[in-house]
Image (cartoon, rainbow, N blue to C red; front, side, top):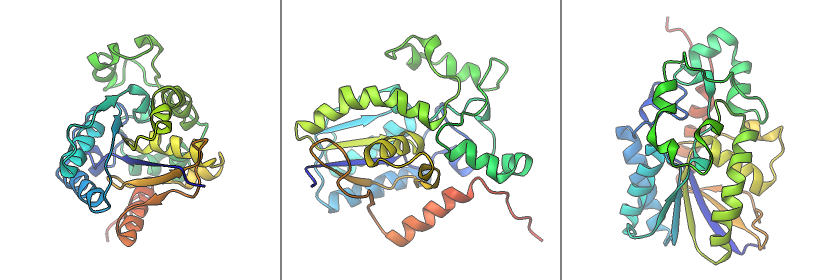
Length: 259
């Protein structure tokens, strides 16, 4: 039986989403389309009458920007926002910056799907020779985390994302929901997938088939134990959402050659 509601979403489109590159912990702002996606999301949530008490984001700009724009459209800019690295996108290690379609061409679509969607397979770790290592690992935001900087991941599976996310869910987010607060989580594709896996009890095998489009709010109704009372629901034009999901799934496929 439903007792609580939770809204979560993957941030609006970023520049590297357009380029089909693994963005991960590289800090990117929203693209022009991403800005519009976040604004549309806010307008739609307003039309449905949502009034939030608390917002959670990662410490990456695209997640924070998305939350700001949504709350602005809602006229709820005053609502408190809390940010944590534990809601960050999955750390894609050595794959960061690479093009998914080119990887599929070189390594096969199945391998890329495993890297992107599987539960317990982590990509090769990032090292100091990687072109984005310094940009990520000297960033001041990672000196403000709740663990030592040298303990932060250099690569993650979805399982590891869930493991670093769960303490934050259990200690910070869940108690607020149990107080009756309506929470918005503006996060990323994999941190949102990990949380949905946990709350809905999705199997290790089935999680590979869950893809999330950018800028689309996901409604989850929870029981008194904060478990899903019914399957998650994408809010918005269902035909457009299915097309957006297919676009996400096709990112890891070899691009057809134009004749």
